[in-house]
Length: 147
Image 1 (cartoon, rainbow, N blue to C red):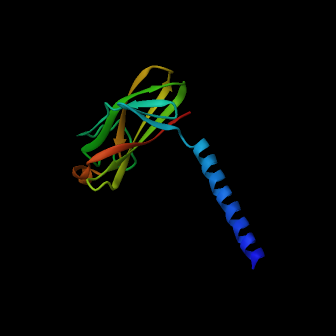
Image 2 (cartoon, rainbow, N blue to C red):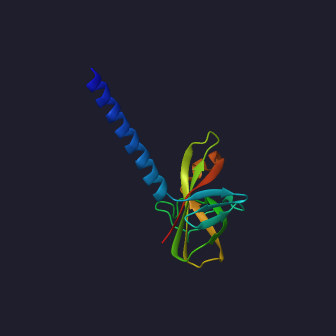
Image 3 (tube, rainbow, N blue to C red):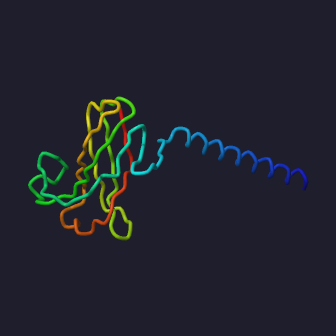
């Protein structure tokens, strides 16, 4: 009986140590996110809280599969970023939500040749269909990737 209790305790300890180790590894490699007054920084790119979402006439120069010629209005998120490092490309991804907080679409903006310390404006086109634009309540930054 004592051997089985010791064996169970040893296995439990090993599992706990492995879980803690996995959490530490995950935390070390996940994007560093910090919320600062008026801005959010992810992967050394700061997005300022002057972002805004608006329904506008659909800009056919911004392409989403299935949109061209089909919709007259679209939801755009615009704002400003500054990077702490040089990136060839920066992709900014948002979740677009309804009043209940459900994700009803996403919005993506891309920038090229992002220089360290310079401000860049972006305009993210959402995937929310025109028939659902009236359901949009909010959005949140999901990720900022730089390469």
